[in-house]
Image 1 (tube, rainbow, N blue to C red):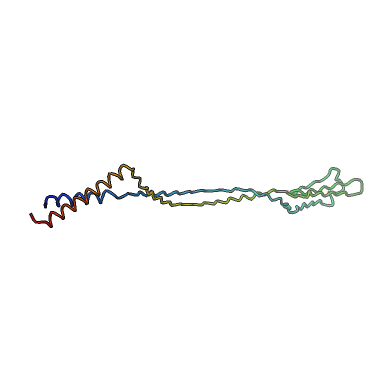
Image 2 (cartoon, one colour):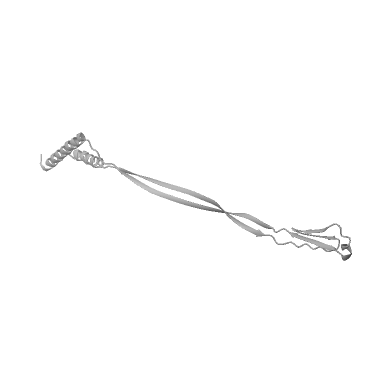
Length: 160
C-alpha cells in the first residue's frame, strides 16, 4: 500500500507539471540614423569704386617755347599731356573712371542629423490547442486516477 502511494505522488506531480503552456518574447531595437546636408549658394552683385589717381606735369617756362612734341605723364589711370602750338599752350587731362562690378557668392551649408531609435517587444502567447482524442484520453485518465484514489482510501480505512 505504501508502494502504491509512493508511485502515485510522483505521477500526480508529473501530470500537474505537464499541463502548462509556455510563451516566448522577442525584443527588437531599430536605430535609424540620418544625416541631411543642404548646400546653397547665394549670389550678390556689388559695385566697388576705385579711388581716383592724380598725375602732375611740371614743365619749365624756358621749355615751353620749343615744345613741338607733346609731353605726357601717366599715373595709375590718369593721363595728362601738354603741347605748344604757335603761341597757345594746349593741355589735355584724361582720367578713366574705374568701377568694378563684382558678383560675390555666399556658400551656406546646413547639416541636420537625426537619430531615431524604436524599441519593440513582442510577446507570443500560444493558444493551447488540444485535439479531441487527447481530451477524451485525459478524461479517461482523470476518472481512472479518481477511482484509484478512492480504492486506495477504502483500503486504508477498511481493516483486513
